[in-house]
Length: 286
Image (cartoon, rainbow, N blue to C red):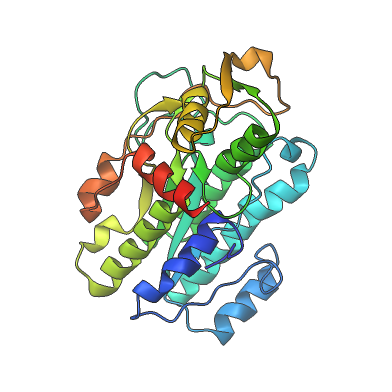
């Protein structure tokens, strides 16, 4: 598991004891720099790797506009190095990706074969990462695109709202960006279930390659997401809806990010919780 100190990586660590069949190796940049091909090659030669879940990513969306080279190295070069190593080791790689790769005017939930139109460095480097992983390990690479990830770990929208809500009586939040929040723990559990099914050979091998979508069920806006957070926590914060144009950022955000998850549900027989249920679980931990 790369990116072990990130939101999904931390959730994977917390869930790992539920999967006693596996010996887990959790690494972050201090243990393995995935942008260094020699380091990746050495790591794979010294460790017997059957499965690799790549949670490492450059996710500072706005900062990526000025740190373009670093974003490219982490989001494109790193995944390519891992895919090449996994191909040599005949190991399955699961690459975590993003809804940002689409960014079209669609108002219909995206399916995995839809047209991509990345806007900005972050989105382009993530799409490039998807492409190099699939190209360098055909038949043994899965790209899991997700959206609006939050957790009790790390920095995310939920924790930002709780912090700002404790400081201010009123907040302005964008209402014209539509999508679905993803609780990192739910994503982590599905990743581990997929690996378990691969190990047990309980699902046809043809399903362990290609692009998949995962987020929680339901649909919302950032405004409604914020309102739900404060309602559940019983915080008397007034939330004012604003348009994207009222809150300009260096990187453009997708106006519509709903992901159709029929493919992953049908292939692996999983059930996905509604975002409000998962939000409550996370807020209880917080």
